[in-house]
Image (cartoon, rainbow, N blue to C red; front, side, top):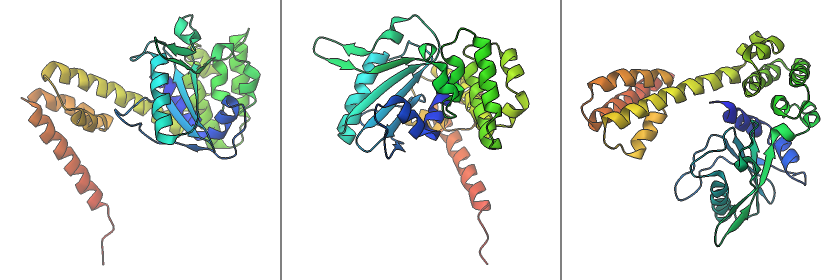
Amino acid sequence: MAFDNVCKILAEEYPSEFARWLLPVEPQEIKVLKTELSIEPIRADSVTFLQTENRILHIEFQTRTKSAPPIPFRMLDYSVRLKRQYDIPVTQVVIFLQETDDEIAFTEEYVDETTTHRYRVIRLWEQDSALFLNNQALLALAPLTQTISPQGLLSQVAQRVATISDRDIRQNIAGYTEILAGLRFDKNLIRRLLSEDVMQESVIYQDILQKGRQQEAFTMINRLFNRRFNEIEPLLIERVRGLSTEQLENLAEALLDFTDVSDLEAWLEQQENNLDRLCQSQLPTKT
């Protein structure tokens, strides 16, 4: 659920550190690109675009090897779109988080009759843990790196987290680490080594959990739509996607009384009007 999202948050919170890790030359300037690519928008929570002075760094985090379209073709697609939009070189890196022997995790190119496109693959379970233990920005990834003593590694990570002096940063890094470590370790062990009260105080940790609940609620609603209605316009689906968890739960109940898509449109308009009235009521009163 949240593993890929945590990595995206880390890359966007610490773009310079990720660029230093993944690019051969240290960039002088770097910014996170908040963009949708042309033609059909690409929406993938695990994707991060970083722009340096003369290069785009495209990072894609994966817990699974299966996707539609397949990862190699997707990398070609991203590369073409990025080059067309920014007209500068693109470095692409796919980072696999969870150990697997699937050949996709060992594939670094897309090949067909006329095209060969190459990208870089990093398998975290093969990476030296020292790099990650010694870098605050990468510390949350350390539990997934190479080790002969996984529990010992997790203990080292917990000790490094405890030494972070800034309380807010320490809580957030603990939250990130707890989530990512779940790909490899038992939940009880994680919470024994990483103080549970510190993780629960993390604003980012709570936000990630909330996003996970919202995504689960949206998935349930979408399934109900598919069973109830023949077809719904994509723009309508996007409006539903933007609802809060509570609103989605209310929609699930209201859906029982809907007869066609127009009822859904009316319900969404009512929700948006309610939000507008709430915002207006909170504006300062002119005197």
